[in-house]
Image (cartoon, rainbow, N blue to C red; front, side, top):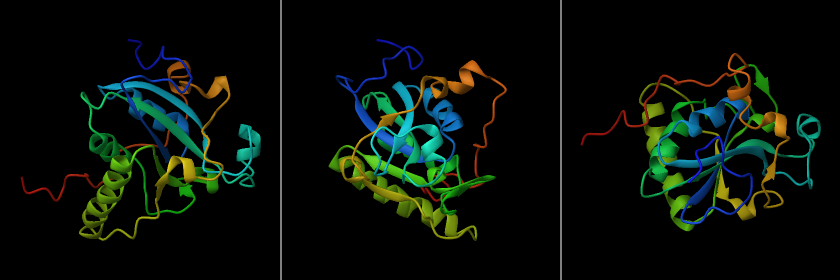
Length: 191
């Protein structure tokens, strides 16, 4: 099996599940997920918009409606959907619509695009759980959109240009505005 840096950029991941996560600039988001044990492949791209085959320049105009998104293919016997969602919630600010730090625009919105009913249920439950954790610490309401991938915009994940793929592996000192957001996903657990 290929590691996350060698995996093909196609839609065939036998034995794996796929989830799409948008949390601001996809360079840093991708690095968060390729480091997680059990993740088979990560690919950055555009999702949730209405334009076919968008380019980075088009997406940056906010006119296509796409979000910068990471496609995460993972082995559910090695990493749970909840663990991926915990990393998602903890590493960006889901309370700011169309913004992550200095990155402003619809392409930087927070979104979860699911490929199974179970993922959709888990994503919605995780949003409620994380909202409780945020509220207990005085943070605002989560603005993250959660929906089935095939119902998001044109329902297609459009891989980004090659120079965006594994950008922070190629450019270790490159821009990244992701990091722990002060509230742990499991901060309310009593077990």
